[in-house]
Length: 295
Length: 266
Image (cartoon, rainbow over all chains, first blue to last red; front, side, top):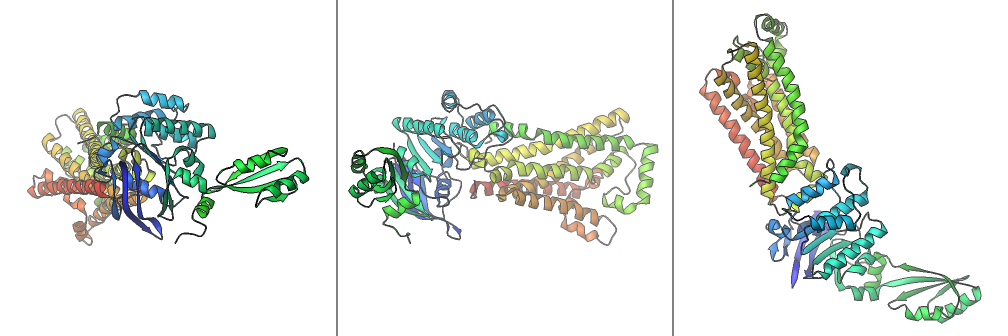
């Protein structure tokens, strides 16, 4: 069953900005990653889901309700984390959170306290003086505190340090266990890879694919760099791995799919160091779609 | 129909602004009332005679002899139009356009509240702000008058003048609220609201200087606010007052409808 349905929407801001003929769905209980480089149209799509803007054509529904005209009813069961942090600067973090809770008609603040504890958030200071990460935590608390069934998160981990990013991913997995439906945008594949079931990929306002994460992962290539104990063993390892490059003691190989073969080969030698570079989102697209830009 | 939480938040966010304007108007109002009386009143009059254009522009020429005429002539011609006008320009922008411009409107819209409810709440917060400011000044003038010149102020007519003044500012409120709902950027909302309010006041001032520009009065809505006509018991002045109320309310309603339908860049 689809909880979020986006049907053939176009929102044209001119100059090739906007989204064009985008359609995809988010099924009940799944996490869908909404992937694309900056300016691809992720936020434009999310704004329409939130009922902030209307599409020029096409339709968007959440739980069968129209995203613009029935926004009020949709919001009863939806948590939203905006991509741009814009609170009311003059308030303290706590008073802002409480204000949002009151606006949502939230009585039970237990979940809010749990979330604050989880993210080690002390929000008693003025928002104006807070760091980006602190503000992001406040945004996360606001989005999750009503314990909604549907979550729309626009670049949720931006501004968080790695430790907090991990906490956030834990939170997301926990919410998934509890049957939540989540749409999460990102421009980092790894983040989506770790949490999502499927990914919708958007570029230049056009949807390129909606794929299972497994399939995307298998299409993704990694560059592995081994530093060995001698130039001699480096040359020998390079000879065993097709397409490997050797430079002094370093062997560089590209791997698509399983790592197993390469690692077994390398284990015959003395590996001093190893680095893995994952392909960027752009490179991933290139690989996945056999190179060439989409047109 | 309104959100209590949001209304309370607006009171907390804007009461300092209100107090500042109350303070400024306390000073002017008390000063003018205190000037009434044989000695000081004459002083103002001779000042008016020495620079008639400036006093005419401010509507302070040929002020009558009763306390009511004196107060209305010196305060309700320009001071109580311009200062609350500035207050309204700032307040109306803060209530809608600023939230959209900053992006924090996203948090208000991401709650189970209809857009209409949010806009009605903000309109009501504005109307309440205007009301408190004008009611405060009216009460202050009454109190100062009673202390210094007991029994001299014609209370009924004075209150009626204030009812008309509130209509005048509801009209300004309508203009600024509409601008605030219309634009997604603060600077456009400010520019339009402030532009119309300030132009109205300036055109009225020019139209009051001599006959040459008198016809300009037909292009400023301020002409509809006629406190002297109200004191004189002129029916036309009361009809004009009703027009101001109606136009103000229509513009506020239009602002709410626009807010309900528009695309918001948050």
